Picture 1 (cartoon, rainbow over the protein chains, first blue to last red):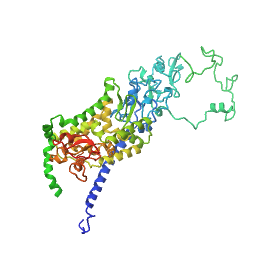
Picture 2: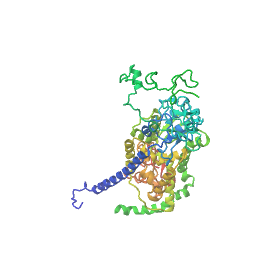
Picture 3: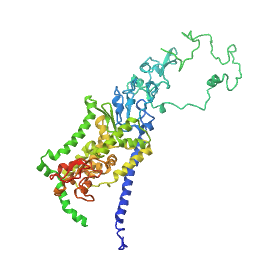
Length: 288
Length: 300
């Protein structure tokens, strides 16, 4: 600025321009830092706690956080007071709807009023049949405290299930402790469980439930697609893909078909006239 | 230097006016007329809040939802365009309801003036007005006001943050939507954020939040170019430089062009950051200002 020449009307605004640039840089930097902080905070905190379940029809969490404007219209249309909006400090994206299955589960209304209430599509209107909802997946998470696993007959989670006998079945198996009784093990089937949380809410244990609804990605393993299931392939191809097995004799079982290792093949299980040999365990189709 | 020398008489007047702007107007016009627009605004702010609260408090479901998105009488959808813009930036195409609701709100504020939202609807306005009032009464001076364009930069970064995180990042902390939602759905720790804004405006930056930082206000400010409702300094011939209007205005920079014919010759305040709050109308004992339309350039 010392070298100003007479022809310098044009140079006059330069200090102002310089100050403006400096201020603009400062402001942009400050605002950028603030926005960066907010963005990082949002990103870090966007992991939904496992106990917080989204309403039926909610988009996958990442899409949901882009779509939900936190208006609470779904909360208003929930007739059972199930849904709440997260408050600052809840550890859930502020203002987004969720429910806690242990306190108030989803009652699975047939008309699903919360879904059409959503103005943005964060709750997907493609969901019209509540039994197709997948809010989570129930998991019998504690076999040490579950009364049925202790050999008692509680059955409450099974009885309250709105998709009873499909989403939860009771599977009979031998009780090795008494060696003369049966155990009826509540078993969840992911192709029918909607994650409504009625079972978790109803679990009779005093504090935490033995059966809990978890986010599906926590509850399920991924399918072992690189394994061929021999029995499926045999069904599909009409023969075993690895050819016939060499049949080695088994001492003491020479009279039985190859692979039949039952000691007394003629002794039918009690009360099983219709099905001479029904294996116990999961998916037996047994009803109480 | 010369500018500062020129300013000093008015600066002295500003100091006199600073503690109780409008005292003269109350004497001249009576308390009620000197608070006419303030009362109307409080009625509007509280009335809108009451419409939202009538449902959860008394079971009278006139309006459901909150300012982010709402449904009135089960037919009229309204959605905040600022939230919609964030959602679009985050990569979600919303349903028609939200777009329709956003369009209605957008059209309304384009018509009456974007920042009418700030002074007539936004609940945070009552918090920052209270901070400004207390600041004047306590005679607190100075403070560090952020640059006037902070809000515009922040608005840009809010949208960038939404695009980068793929979520409504600003809504984790947005005190405006948080306050309104808190009043209707429950606060949690949001009280702290509202208290923070109050203390920021009171102790650190006079008119800091609404006037310099809030990106939501900045977004509504962008809708102010075509505002029909405008304040006119039509009686500027009567102005006695008492500075009350400057002391009370939340965006004092908008007054000067109209009142002092600086850079324009008509008396209309056309700056898009004027919130049309009408406080200048109230506190002026000489009836210099009036709220009128943008076509009314008459002087009286």
